[in-house]
Length: 178
Picture 1 (tube, one colour):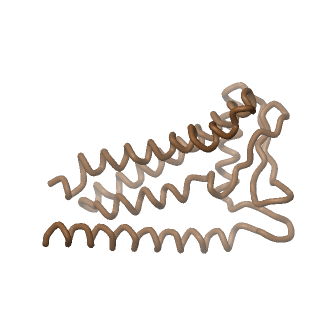
Picture 2 (tube, rainbow, N blue to C red):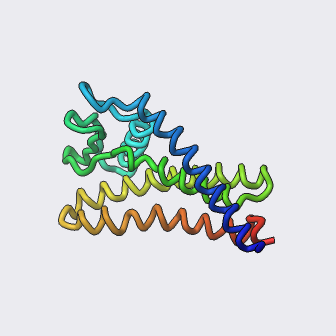
């Protein structure tokens, strides 16, 4: 009976948190992202593109960004070559929402949970910027590997980091462990 209660409580906390955060994020996108007329991405997506540009420039690649005129994305250029688009799904917010939902579902004390959410979210966010920069360099140098780079290797990085953070949380901090 206790194991059923634990599973049900996990599911309620996970899906409740996920739906609340997803709803809030959807409202944010609806208010900040323009999908008709003069298109523009949400500020967080633009910030990710700007930070990726900054990182690429500091890695020795001349990079530029510009709002795509035909879709809600930011075009990323490396050495004057269009290599990728930064779309809403590339800003890491969706995966951070998933991460937070899992951590809350296996919550520990408030301070521990709060600090881990902050630390983990920042790690995911900045890892994502590095991921976009690396994939942009890889697409610039090896465009023939676009499918495997974009669809397999680079999602593996961001989801791998998230999984490791979840594993550490459950093993070291979660009340479930106690």
